[in-house]
Amino acid sequence: MIVLVLGLPVAAYSAGTTAYGASMRTVRAQAAERHEVTARLTEDVRREKNSLAKRPAQVRWTDAGGIVRTGAALVEPGTSKGAAVRVWVDRKGTVTSPPESALNATATGWVMGTAAAFGVAFGTYGLWAGTRLLLDRRRYAQWDTEWERAEPLWSARFRR
Image (cartoon, rainbow, N blue to C red; front, side, top):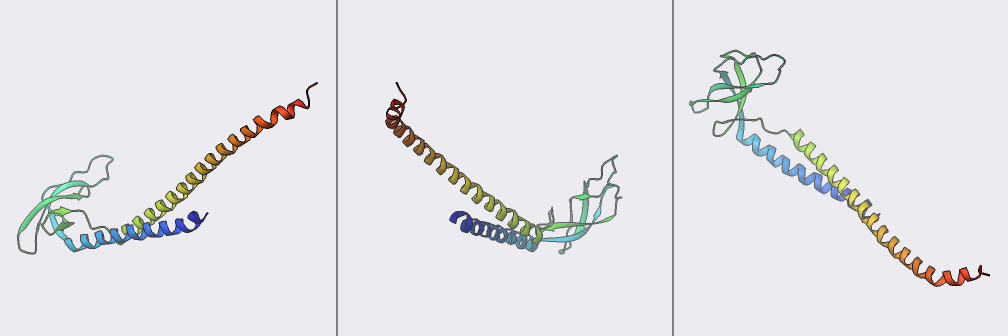
């Protein structure tokens, strides 16, 4: 019970805050190295039947140094050539995904804290069940030994 009452909250809090801290470092690093630019489509993006998913398309933009760059970005279907789209690029000018948000870090912290709590709970249950199994085996062995000594005396009373 002590392991469960004390260990569960400590493990959950420790795992959650550690995961949150690591995720926030990733969030800050990605935010520092990625920025959003306005690019123009260099091709039409076809709309396919029954598909609302974004599709990859070639885009072109000019970076802060005046260099014209191109890359592939996910664009809504049905967007025409020359339309402005917002894309995320890294320091090298490569199209990339948006940086993770603080909400992602918070969710990661909660998920890892919950997983740690369940791990401690199941581990404690497993320890309890294993200990009980070993103690029951020992008690049954002692009972068998005592019964072997007592049964001949006890059953002799009923013989005629």
